[in-house]
Amino acid sequence: MPSFNPGLVLRYLLSAVSYYPRTTVALFTGGTADKIDKAIGSHFKNSFSSLEKADISAIESIRKTLLRSPEVISVTEFGRGSNILPKTASTEKISDICSIMSKTESECHFLYSLIKTIKPTHCMELGTCLGISTAYIGMALRHNGHGTLTSFEGSPERAKIATQNIKELGLENNVSLVQGKFQDVLPEYLQKTTGLDFAFIDGHHQEEATLHYFKMILPKFVKGGIIIFDDIFWSTGMNRAWKTIKTHPNVTDSFVFKGMGIIQLEGVRD
Ligand SMILES: C[S@@+](CC[C@H](N)C(=O)[O-])C[C@H]1O[C@@H](n2cnc3c(N)ncnc32)[C@H](O)[C@@H]1O
Image 1 (cartoon, protein in one colour):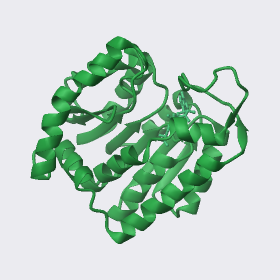
Image 2: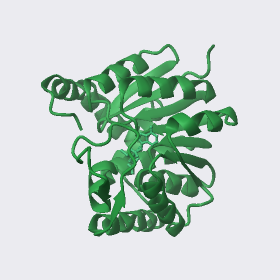
Image 3: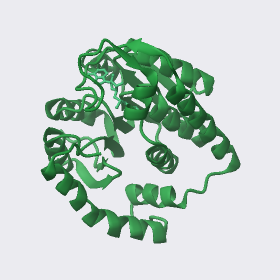
Image 4: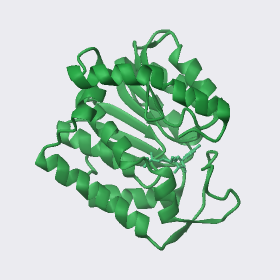
């Protein structure tokens, strides 16, 4: 969702110039051209099996519980936080975090369809929050029959809730949560990681930070890997970061879908 900045709103609207032709082709052909098109095609087909429907509805029922929760937790914010939640408060309502920060059901269906389509082995996520997008990615990996997700969250209290949610969904074999500031915990993880084929970057939405994380994870990616950057219309800085990323020499394809910038990588090149 773009901030209320006329330039950004215009760029958001202009992204529709490629959105409609490409999603229409993907919809009618089932997306035969490449991974991104295939994922979009399968998202629009939206043909979930009864097992998938039941598991997705288990995640959505957790979302409903969070949205109704009267509980408050203490704030630990490392990124720029939300444009909506107050920046000086020492506590935050779980229901507010869920309604403002968690990806919507439709966006999560897209993440789910993408993971079902690309069948990744090693996935990472920056920004677990309460674990909603994490649960969708983890559930798709479970349904694929292979693949793991490592998801990072700075706030100890949000990470605790996400851990409970992942446990409740029985996704512990597919999902590991790492609590800590990305800047502190990511280097150690990347040191022992190779063969990444999917990343969802949904936290610390600042231009330099986004570019920094991109440069850090890029050498760990396999050919054909997919990275999604959320909120690329959130600020002019995020939009500039997106422009730099999509024109990087290792990027073979890019697309904007539901406010997320999606890239496909050529693979590691020194
Ligand atoms: C938009 S929320 C993630 C939402 C989640 N992906 C979902 O859709 O359910 C971003 C999260 O990233 C975390 N975060 C932001 N910057 C961070 C940093 N530098 N280190 C650790 N966590 C950070 C925030 O605490 C927040 O919970």
